[in-house]
Image 1 (tube, one colour):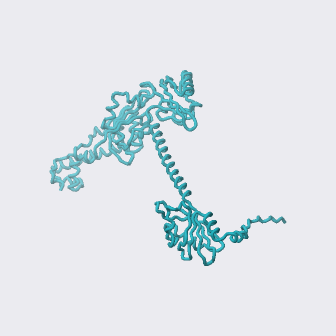
Image 2 (cartoon, one colour):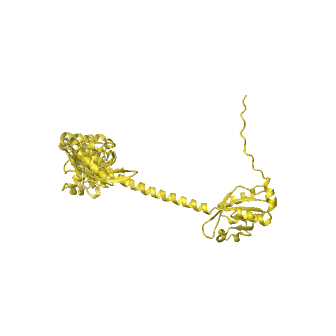
Image 3 (cartoon, helix red, strand yellow):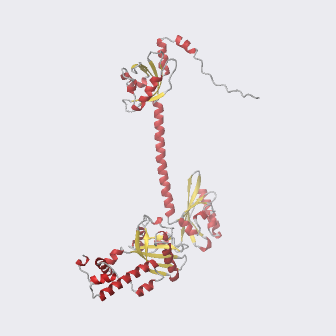
Length: 481
């Protein structure tokens, strides 16, 4: 049987030398040794009152002499009093207490930090309290805390700057690519570049930039890239896009960051080239400023119903702060009550090429809902697009009472089939039937309102409300009573 030897523990250091050292030190020599070993030494009696104090010259401005005759616990801050009580209680002959850091109020306004240990040379004698100055350590801690706060503020500013850059990069109407100057591979691409090049953003990342253009432009692109790497500058060039999407002007700029160099490529298409709906081309239209200032909402979407451009009136209806919040997102996020109504609108548009007076709603980003009337037209050109004019309607109660708008006739209702949703048709049909019934009842009773109300199963007030709503008969101000 093997016996594993037990690990030997370190034995405490022998104290045999201490009496010899004490015998060699007289009273003055012992005092000098204590003074040299500590920055501050205090003699405290059994009641905790300071009877003597010896400190280095650095404590002159702290007025330690004023502590004489006071209890040690009264010279420290409130949170340090418990530590002082424990320090004096633990002090005993033949042993030194563990170190405790306390703070003294200072005339300078900054607390004086001292690290204390205590010992009692004789069982019933006074207590010797030895202190070490911690002001240097406290100053370093304050500097560390200030440095951490500075780093946090710098980090917040850097994060805010990066957020602004990301936002501008995403909403920029100009096609922009960020390319690694060494490998020529795309690092970042904004949505405008994706539309111009006909690829999703995720399919552009990591692609050699020359593969995005027609092979005939290869030499021109390589020459620009070589000049950019050699001199940091390169002249603008013309290059053809793939699949006959037109030509673009490529403007390149070099910048250094994160231990490497990258290039920003701006792709500026010709007017009316591959993406006639980009921001620059729309800005060139002479009517754009007028459409932007229209009080009615106007939106242009691509064939997939994603917003390409929207004016300020639509942004107000949709409770959006900027056009970039709508660009690239489906119009169905804000238009129509549900998916069925939106499908009806676009199915009718596909069948007839245009839609007029389509009653629906615009749902705001913050829960608001506005009744609107939509007129839409689809473009058969290349690229295909859809234009929608969105007119806000007054509240239904104001429409019925203030303007006395009459329900549609049967012929008008029949014309709406296929152009508006069934829910809207049912609502309009109900209004029409109610008006016809009220007119018939008044005609049968020879305008006897009480008899007409009884015939229709309504109260007199209910009859008056519907008569006022549909503009039937002549109502005086006292008829509502």
